[in-house]
Image (tube, rainbow, N blue to C red; front, top):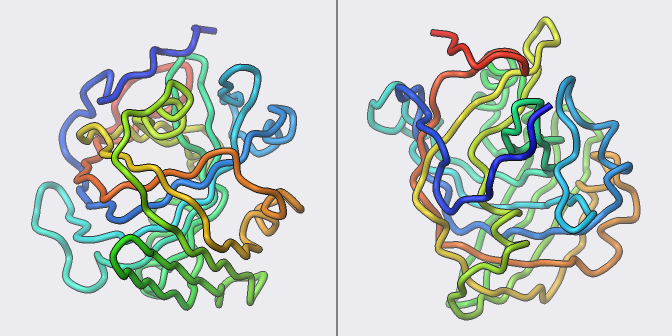
Length: 253
């Protein structure tokens, strides 16, 4: 079992040929520190909780997705742009690669949700969603429609502050260069990505009323103040081919 790779502001390795591209815009990163034992049961096979100073983290991340394109093509009209709110965790595999583990991903495009669930296995869920921005005030709303639990909702109002250079823990939370996802056989795959360093800003929560974190298995967590809130105008990112298994780095073409 390898030690975790260094935390770097840009991808520590090439993602390979482009499989799809997308823009992540106007994101808010809301994080709670938790005991690693709390998130360990949610890790896929071969992945353990990633920790910083003994803590792992649960995140709520609302944002705008725009312009998903396949194999370097321009973004898909309409279906490639939508609102998203995800609940995510952080893991590290036996090769030491750090990545994201998604618990749930709300989106407001039913067709996109249905296709993505079938083709990738990601836990996308259809929701009614709204986004509003007025200067430094940003508001996100979501209410789940399908599949359940129907009605699980989230409402966040964020006040965006000054640009900032990330502290080490903030780099740990935001500089993630892949995601872990089991395939249909239960083998954990790693999907690498690349993008520029996050342009981060300080942020505060004027309001947070959230049921998505509890629906993901972390009841009561969103009732307490988060340990970190950051905002970013966003980045353009690209994903390479998935790399199958946690014991090998062979690219599946």
